[in-house]
Amino acid sequence: MAEPPPPPPPSQPQLKLFNSMTKAKEPFQPRVEGKVGMYVCGVTPYDFSHVGHARAYVAFDVLYRYLKFLGYEVEYVRNFTDIDDKIIRRANEAGETHTSLSSRFINEFLLDMAALQCLPPTREPRVTEHIEHIIELITKIMQNGHGYAIEGDVYFSVDGFPEYLLLSGRKLDQNRAGERVAVDTRKRNPADFALWKSAKEGEPSWESPWGHGRPGWHIECSAMSAHYLGHVFDIHGGGRDLIFPHHENELAQSRAAYPESEVICWMHNGFVNKDDQKMSKSENNFFTIRDIISLYHPMALRYFLIRTHYRSDVNHSDKAIENASDRVYYIYKTLYDCDEMLSKYREEAISVPVPAEEQNLVNRHHKAFLDNMSDDLKTTDVLDGEDGLTDLLKAINSNMNDLKKLQQKLEQEQKKHQKKQQQKQQQTQKQPEDYIQGLIALETEIKDKLSVLGLMPPSSLSEVLNQLKDKALKRANLTEEQLQEQIQQRTVARKNKQFEVSDGIRKHLATLGISLMDEPTCTSWRPCEPERPEESGSVTSDRVPGKINKSSDPA
Image (cartoon, rainbow, N blue to C red; front, side):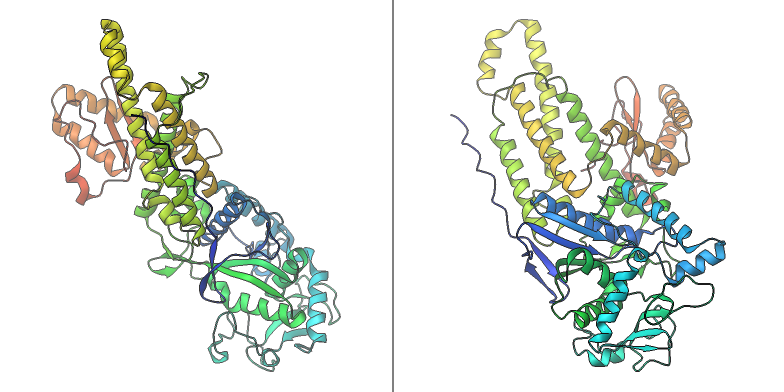
């Protein structure tokens, strides 16, 4: 009896995003059908970027990629705040210009983003390139009665703007004076914030109607977002710490100058915490992106970050990122093994359809992916949930094992010339062509979705697996030669039945994140999560001959 045809691919669900303004998930309807304008606040480049920055820009890169996957034409703007008190102070300490310092760290930031496979935004403007637009916006704010000048400084007057604090929902008496700048007692209201700062000796400045000076912190994004995206655009994003004061002040400035100004959806990502405290440079409790990717592959860091929903806080720990590294190795190893198996058949014209079981699995995964991603980017469920990535990877490994067994069986039958029995079995069981088509469908689905998540490596799978192994050796403080020496010592100990010695070598390597796999002709290794003392009892003893001590499939 023929198998029923698989159901048709699912229709596309409505994209819903959480709007920080309304505190609710809402159907996303861009201002112009088929096009999206998105502005994300960028870094202040005075040092290497930390993992908190990676959290924000990976989160919005996932959104950017998914919008493009849905067919939108996205204008993505992410700025650089290349003039700031911290930049000026750091440049003076280093004996270089603010331009030199900021440009250097902009370049370093871009290298970090490339390593994490964050797509370049459409535009990456710098504040110093838009002084003219900033001055024009401040002038408009003052003309509308919402700003005032004092001795070359210009402030925004919150008392004359009733909508102030609409985004954050705060009260004026909750404002933290001196959050990023010194308190100025000349202000009409302590909550008033700087639009323009008068020039100080030894600082860079630009000519303006109020004298030489430079922009305040918040005005830059109002000016640049309006310049590139207009006064009304679709998405404004950043870390949750930017809701107040930065985004609150942006909103006030923009509407004070142009009342029609509007952001359709405000989006904010959660923090990266270290010991339950927000990771930040000001608290000196941060790891730079370089710190992490010196020991772990950048794709392990990206996986670690998107495994938690973008609005939730990520708790950084060695165990969590080790687990992420283990998972990406498993993913890429499965795809590599699949590629290797399929390479024998790439040139063959196979006309049989994808088996219903595999096609149904692909369809379910595709539907679950769309449902989860369209529900405010539920990347956690995409990676670990029902009908998620793990199910497809397991199916690939299962199909590869079954195909190997079938091929071995067919080879044995051919040798014995058991043609009649072979023909009878061919009527009832899967044939190699069925497995091949199923593997191609499963592999294509996984690679397509990994690409949307930014997790498909730019280099070959073989190369990225070697890179993951190199990182594991570095964490273990071993060279490949030193590891092979220990493997050889263990092999000799096993032959001499010195099982305590061989067990000790294997267990020691397991604590370093090196898993040994005994095969018929040799012992190979792969990275793994380091065994903790409380886990050591679960490791298989060397007294079982030929036993693979730890599965290459951690799922």
